[in-house]
Length: 217
Image (cartoon, rainbow, N blue to C red; front, side, top):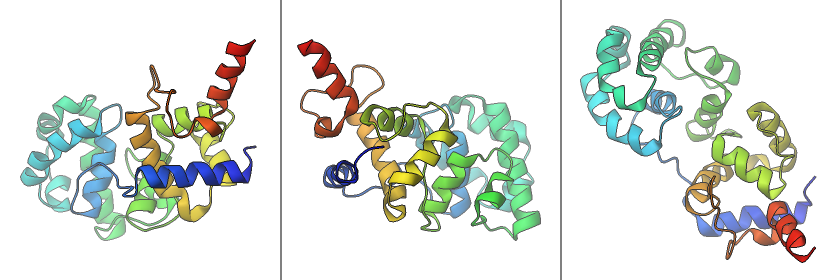
């Protein structure tokens, strides 16, 4: 397990790099963030942000989503990919929010993951961003980078990564840390050709240390 001092340095360095650790998805209402995260599955946040203004204008309330024809919803979100399934999930989710939660986004992992199309990653993001609870959003950036750094054992399983991060990350830092992972993954620690030279985290990066050792050998 990573030394506490190294974990603290990583957290602080990311804070210095990205003081405003905000979700890049744009929304005004709580359920809009829930829906936007669903649309972001296997799609970029930038693309989702291009789609949601028209979508939320056409369907300005949960009631309008609940009464919507999934085919029409799919027309608005076509460019996000997998639009048929996503459209069905948005309509069904709106219906369940109204029927079971009084039109409010629930505040527990169990209730959130019982909603159509909502998994642990989405639920964690909602708990962190909407309710300020400890949240470990293990998306592709978080999984990749924490494995490279040695914060996790390199597992690609989101639940396994989440469990490992819960053991080493302070709860109060968790949500913002995961947002910063996304930003760092886009800027520096990319999936392909990461910018290791000059990386501010290379001192505490297990992958970089292993590469330097291999170069010497």
